[in-house]
Image (tube, rainbow, N blue to C red; front, top):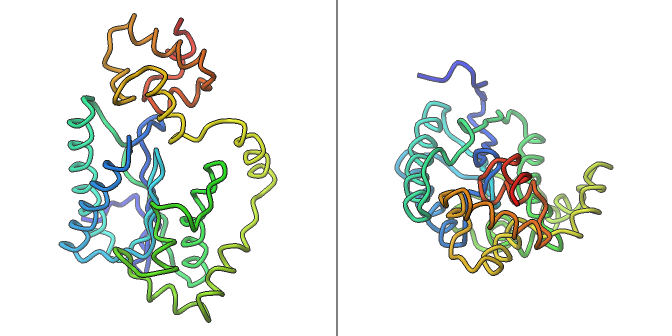
Length: 250
């Protein structure tokens, strides 16, 4: 049965967003991303879900899907349960990995479709110094080269040429608040860089293991990360530990 709280698209197209609970990371490393991508492709193929665009960030995922809503809902539920079990087992954690259910925004027009694809592909610009065309974990490079897991034909036929597709992506300009975010972000590490830095600083294999330590050891790690220059909000995000706990850790 279709979830009554979801708005259906007459075109059967949806922009799906998946977020880690409390904004915590859902990908510890590239092996996690590979597993998610492989399992995603498996479930999409089995259920007839067409993938138009995608992007894997450290603590969230964007997907642009074409299928009937009940099929998408069933498929996404299976995918997220499967991945959460894998992630928790591999990294020795317990509890919910994802923030509630996934978000879905219906796509009805060609303009909405084009803007959604661009938005998804521009997500890596959140990472200081990262260009969309260089980011490995999105479908943008599939559109510029050879499709691998994405169905690119439907979107590409909306553009006169490959150059027009690139120009459309490059035409995006951030709002003033985004410009301010970009200005301040270059002074800090991205979540991916912060994870690598934290692992080296603490000499641990997985950042998510901090949450399972006893209180004294956990707080020592958190205090070390704060002294190392990581912001409280970022530490909370990459460890999955509450912000207030991080703030009080000494």
